[in-house]
Image (cartoon, rainbow, N blue to C red; front, side):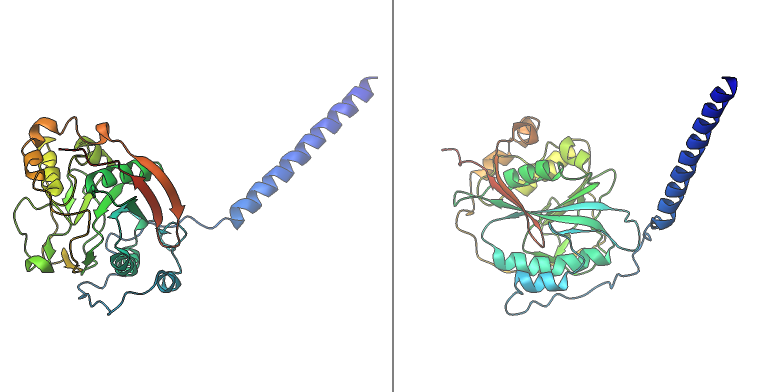
Length: 313
């Protein structure tokens, strides 16, 4: 009887040892098969080419042509460096309506530009639905709310559709302490700031910085002054705007006529006078919109937003 118990105990121990051996072998095999972790990308990418004048072809390439050149871009306009761990996780947010020609030029230029910087990135095109009055502030606010549901982005680039960077040393990443104005020198303005408070074109902010300023105002319908309002919000929130060197923060603007539904709005000057009074209550915390669709296109993620109707004044 005693021998029988000892035999059963011995069999259980042998079975347990056999199971541990199999598990250890499987774990060892998995570790051997797994690729080694990537090392961090260098502070300055070795792929940079520096200043490169932008020469636009007579007609932009089609999206299919751009896609054939962008073999490393995943659906949704997503890219990660294949050979190193990127130092930056950047979402590019582009407000958009009826500018397909500009968008094709920009996508063809932006994907290789960002890849040379070895940035982990995704491009979002935020389109205003309908033919009502354009509202860039609501589009940015809504787009960024949706973008931050997608991934843990360390930086958000607010990017107009008609600007092409001329020097890839102008890194699409954020300053940890203050918002950055990247479009310092645009050919339209003879590569100079048109005025000190100019804060348009291409802007970089961390999600925390964007929340701190309460995002854009939602009240600027039509063209004009929403960027000046954003400048004021940065100062009122206790931060300042920083800029890279004018030597490489250079852009070419694609010429275009004013869009129907985005005419200059003289009433926006009156709204700008109230920024100090309204910025805490007008912005992300008062945002109202409808997300009509979200599509993973080959070269970008397409968000369609209903911003509502312009209030009667």
